[in-house]
Amino acid sequence: MSTISSPSVELSSYRDQHFKGTRAEQDRLLRLSTTLYVGNLSFYTTEEQIYELFSKCGDIRRVVMGLDKYKKTPCGFCFVEYYNRQDAENCLRYINGTRLDDRIVRTDWDAGFVEGRQYGRGKTGGQVRDEYRTDYDSGRGGYGQHLKMARAFKEQGPLQYRQKENFKDVDKELKTMVPARE
Figure 1 (cartoon, one colour):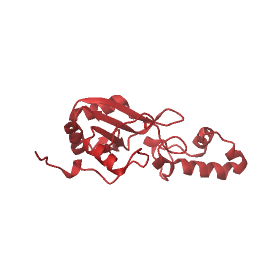
Figure 2 (cartoon, helix red, strand yellow):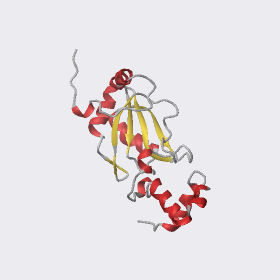
Figure 3 (tube, one colour):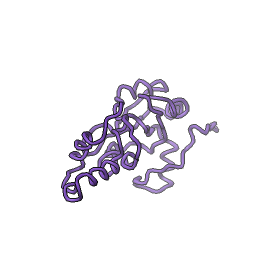
Figure 4 (cartoon, rainbow, N blue to C red):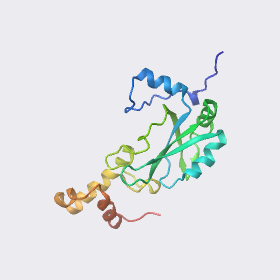
């Protein structure tokens, strides 16, 4: 029996560089998976909102919200696991590229959630992409972490800056330095 493939449900070129296994194993798991990676979420998007939108495509087994590994707060991604492949394919067809919390949602196949992957992989705890962002994005924590660190370094000098712990103090100080945008 052959299946009809749609470009919207085919595997993308992205592969998780932290996958424990061979590329062939990862590809096999991706082709059988019922789990999706969901990106570009607002830091304020709730699990309930994810369930409400994604359940329109089928029954959801579970949602795992992505968290900052230090602060344990949402950091803009999640994993959605469906009970069957067809529902996940429908999600890729119909939800990828739609708006949630005024942001364009991106979905992609995931080889299957493994404990520990819910944490951001960036040096500051969140997602790597948010560390390098140079624009102001209120839905994703303001300015990128590298820009915040550079401004703090410029304002405070190297010694005071190096004494900061996990950049929490830098974030607090930058809120007073950078004007808030509405």
